[in-house]
Amino acid sequence: MECILALKTLTAAMELRRALIAAGMAAPVVALPREISSQGCAQGISIPREQLSRAEELARRVAAGRWRVFCMQGDGYREVRG
Amino acid sequence: MIYLDAAATTLQKPDEVALAIADAVRTCASPGRGSHAAALRAAERVHAVRALAAETFGASTHNVIFTHSATEALNIAILGLTKPGDTVVTSSLEHNAVMRPLYEGRRRVRTVRCPPACPQTCPEGFSRALRGRVRLCVCTAASNVFGTILPVADIARICTQRGIPLVVDASQAAGVIPLSISALGAAALCTAGHKGLYGPQGTGLLILSDLCRPRPLVFGGTGSFSAHLSQPDELPDRYESGTHNVPGILGLGEGLRYVRKRGEADILRGEQELIEHLCSRLSDSWEIHGRGKANDHTGVLALTHRSLSCEDVAQRLSGRGIAVRAGLCCAPMAHRTAGTLSRGVVRISVSDLNTAEEVRLAACALEEIGECRQ
Image 1 (cartoon, one colour):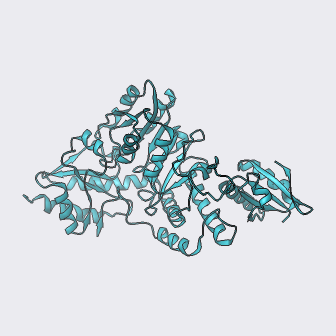
Image 2: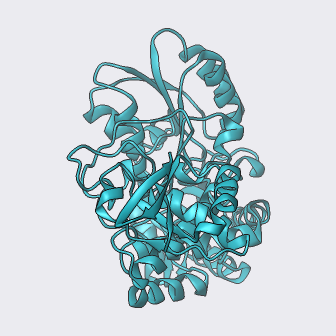
């Protein structure tokens, strides 16, 4: 687990997950670590770092609501795009 | 039993509905409450039903709210979009699920007379009533007593022109009349899940437009933003506090799939044919109420006997294994409009899963009862 696409609702996460799976990407929904959930995000989808650009492109296409991207850096997650 | 009370709830369901419910009870936990397999399974399946409902009613997925009934959906829409003293315009065929929230909430109600036998005249009445400081218009798409199909598209057009939000009660129309909230330009569409959509009891839908955000009626845990004491703004979470009725929702999903496979137009045509057949078999002992052209009605028929009370007729039918509804059917305004308030009616209502043979047997029973003097 390298990066997390974090969304505000489960519905938005499920919508995006469907699109990612349809595009052949594994898209497990994961429990958000406190450092992300405390920033106003409710659900997350784990994305391998190398597939992040493609996942974001799909997120834009399905308009799954606003999402934020957190990636593992050092000992915790840091927001890389929001 | 021959079940002819589909307007109350459809008793016969597609087999897949019960199977989905049983499977959900065994395998699905609570969506959004955990990332374990049982919660994720529930989340995925509930989302699939939400997406299907969104497609069916022309809405965005996040604007589909699962409720426990059409009544709950209507309460959220009506009480959440208005405040005491506001003027609300309704048709005269509304169910108490519309009228009681209005009266209990002390809204000023302006009612448009809609004769159940000639619904084409309604838009003219709405055009006159939707003037001045009207906060909201609430209109049923089909009467639960007389089956009258109201021209909601025309009424919606007037509301749009006047800038007045429209709430459509689709409880009797969903599953037999295609309704798209985006095509109508309505603010909200409310329906039961357990009637023409063939889901189980305890299910309902509130479909919102992108601009419609009523105040929630219920507050609580949503599985999201748990650190905040305030209710989330995001949909559908804002209106879905508490644990979802996952078995019910998944059963509703199978009902929705059945309707989409069969097609609303075919379902409606079949139901109209059954009712037409029944009408053609009724003797002079029976009076049919609020019925105009067959195409203007769903599969609902309201009738009275010349001398027997409605309750007596229903009891006699029940004794012959035939289930119908008798009385006012929770819609006193509709009865006042049709002149049946003092006696009520015997309401016979069919679904797509009734057969011509069942209706033939019911017609025979009515024929026998029709000959009775008291």
